[in-house]
Length: 180
Length: 180
Image (cartoon, rainbow over all chains, first blue to last red; front, side, top):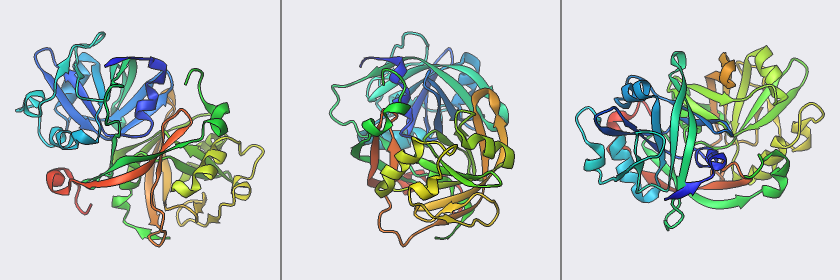
């Protein structure tokens, strides 16, 4: 898990993969599965939809910190498992054999098994729409990992794996931020 | 293009495909390419990130209406083309050979060539974060279309096509909304 330029971290979220969001409430770590995410800015800033129905929300609101971890297709059953039980009564790192790794700027842990991790601070909560606005402060990418395909939740219990890559860099040159 | 249950429309956005957003400013149609989208609610409600830097934003703000159209991989060059020119000086429907179809509840047109279309009303604008909150009011899906693979923008000028499907309906049963 090596450092990644923070200015490139939006490219982890923009394709719309299902993500794991970790928190630390002062006593213990927790993880939630989130499929409702959006890039807000190259800075990077992200939005996620969450609220009191997620046990992690209390920790997110209190500590104003989290880590967004990007799982790959080989982790799909852990991702679904994390999303279908609650941190209220489950140690999800233990139950799903995921390894918490100390982050640099936040107390929420990175997840060692994931392809990438983004340390984030909560910079705003738009309560009316259940939108939490995050700013990425550090990012990591495990380029040694063979499996790099992420998964996209459809929302009906099915998922779509990343398929073929298409390169339109030349056509899009005028629209890309510097260094990306 | 047949009607689709509005309660299932979130499944078009949740996987995170690049979308086309049409508007009608009272005089002419326009289209923008948007990759920063998010589901907010099964209702359905969606968020998109946009602002004055997109020519379509003025029409979106004034009319408080739009259509989200879901293109497939065969349309990738039109999608990139739409995203790299401006409605200020271009008739994008004409230039890219896309066909506007009259919508039912909004003046913004559906796009005939797309896999699916969602008629939307703007229900809020969170100006501070450039978030436009949309409510879907009608949805359409072209099931006769052979190519159904959508594309996900990475943000660096590359795109990822939908690959293999995974079924986790049984594991997720407790978390799915009714009728999905």
